[in-house]
Amino acid sequence: MNVSKYTKAVRKVLPLRYCGAVIVAAGSASRMGGIDKVMAPLGGEPMIVKTARAFQQCDAIKEIVIVTRQDLLIPVMDLCHAFDKVKMVLVGGSSRQESVAKGLNALSDKVKLAAIHDGARPLVSWQVIDRTVRAANTYGAAAPGIPVKDTIKVVRGGIIAQTPDRSQLQAVQTPQVFDIDLLKAAMKKAEEDGAQVTDDCSVVERIGMSVRMVEGDERNIKITTPLDLKIAELFWEDNT
Image (cartoon, rainbow, N blue to C red; front, side, top):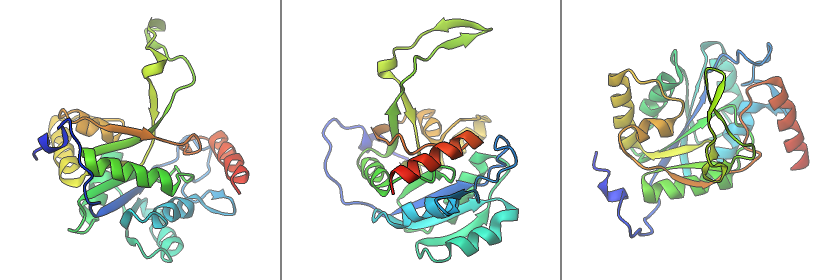
């Protein structure tokens, strides 16, 4: 994969390439206190429906694959059948990386850009999706982020070892969007190296690829705990 075409100083506005989305909703929800976050109600409907609808409504997204757990395969199919961009719902793997890989392989051959999104971020807007896709179309890799509000400490052995400059820190969100060949090559390298990464940006960063950051949204939170779900409800009510 030649990444040099994305590293020139002068950028040109390129025709928007065909983008497919992989929504990863295969987690065990171990920190949700017995609540299944994929199916948890938010604004009167399951979270996965809100997540899928945002991608359905974004013109930059042409097709969608949803990766979920075996026990949710049929329920998710039933819930998302009305979205014509959803081409497939399939069972994920034993890790997030494996689930992403399965989702990528299920996208059609027409896909040139792949948007990877956490199914547990149901409040993502089509605007965030659109600007991330367009940035990746130009730069090869892009992700939304928001500036951190708290001072962050690096802690080793219970002792503060470092205080990074907060002005240079951002909390990364999803969707994270990539040239699909780039992402597949980077994931293959990570698998060969036995590398465990925390997000998809980290996969391509490992092979020296820069990722363009775009403006995210404070409401685009990841539902990880029951408190997150309550916060998401407040965001939803405030936006309706």
